Length: 304
Ligand code: AMP
Image 1: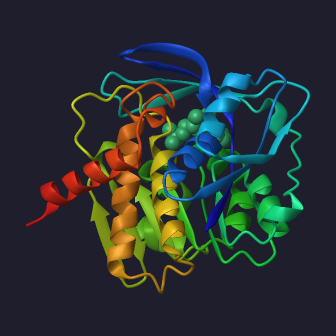
Image 2 (image 1 turned 90 degrees about the vertical axis):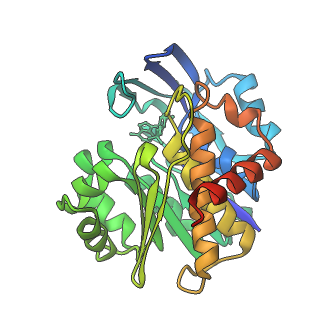
């Protein structure tokens, strides 16, 4: 099985109470692809600029991510800079420079067009939709978005998510998108927009899966120190979608309850690893055995 991911590939500038770094490899497409690559083959569609360094490309290649759909365009790579509050629960975005993404017209290579699994990671909703339309009858499609697009491109976003089987979104963004404060009500409102499965990510408090037949709450892993939460939500998405792809699940309505619950826990596991170092640092150090070990730890601390 193979997963096609579309999303931002970026350079990030990050400030946390632990320190600061600039122009480190990031982007939603990068984080989703790296974390899903522990479970399945991944192909990444996106664009980088002339400044994209060979050593950053090598990080993706080390994880066997197929980069034939990663275009290199004249100009600079997408740049994002953000800063976390003292307790790391709030983030302020200082810069979003779309750069090469501004005029990106994704052309999904011919050999990806029958991809059965598609994840539309965070990027302009019209780009997400353009990619979706080039896939001949995607069997299973989900995606992510963020406040930047909810505020700036709401009608395009509403049009885009109509076709999705599932959406992963954080709690603040779910409230913003639905206009409902209560998360159960917010999930219900989003389900009516298209995706019948809604996963609401709640930062260090884990995530909740909403399906028409019920819901499931996955806790967050209690790390001793959270170094940098950037990309944690995307890593959750990569773990969730990567595991479902590995399992061959093409319809969430047909997935067994244990499959859905395990996908949520793998999402939490990958999200937690992501926070242990700046940028993609920790994702470069772990392997599937580390993931399984933490997955079992989740089982032990939630069983009763
Ligand atoms: P997360 O912490 O899961 O929200 O993801 C952070 C990543 O998303 C960073 O690596 C950024 O480069 C990327 N990002 C930030 N803003 C945007 C945006 N407006 N569109 C796409 N990707 C973004």
